[in-house]
Length: 171
Length: 210
Image (cartoon, rainbow over all chains, first blue to last red; front, top):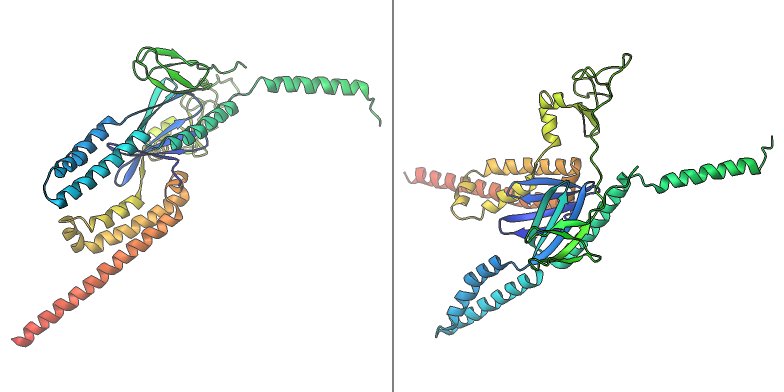
């Protein structure tokens, strides 16, 4: 799959793609996607937490579980069977929502907060965040010349000075 | 050169109070009992290059005569300073050019929407199955089928030129959409020919009975 993570929201789907030095967030609509890019160079923190999607669970309960429950009280066998099926479906959906939960990701970059949220399985979020953390650290390390480079230059200079004095030049 | 600062704190998403990141990534807010995972990084400081002052022998920026020219605008060919220069697509343009004649180029640089012609094709095909709308869709099939093929070719072209589109729309998806659109086109074409023949036969029989 080319998309690294797909978040399902109440108002549409959001896809996240991790590029080399930035993250792309795509809000899908019918014929185009709204693009937002978050560069890694000035990312300060990434916060992740999970909550229960109570709104969606309530909607599933109202639309699926309650009619199923009402059908169970009917004397007709067909309705009782349909009610059982509805309740089973509602129970499965609620279990999925409880397992996956609604994941929120907040990325703080240069004082601005970028929020991402949606229902997605936890291990997919773990995989995305592990890769994103590695990419962010690599991007920030590459952009910063480390002080160890200066010490290596000093050591090589001192070594070359010592070798010049130790071994006389043979013409 | 000094090391970039290490971020050690963040704001609790629940109650917005400042919290310190602990030794482990798992953090808990003592105020609202919010729990979550926090990762902190070393952000790079933003360096704003205002351009160097021009000496008597230096070429000067056309928009800032007191600043030294450091690049040539790819749009106008003018000498520009570091303050004016904007990198886009491997070329350097001046801000003035991108604001005026090069607004089209600037628009591409800061595109906020990504056109998805592949999704348009799928939308066209799905509309065939939506009640009441499909009546209009069946009548106007030459228009939207032609548009669909044009959109598909555009999707193929974009997936080869835009790296983001290449990640989103693979060659398999293009081929499958082409097959689907081909089947739909063929069905509509055969259906229209059959309808025309049927109407012609009915009209001929009508004349014959007269």
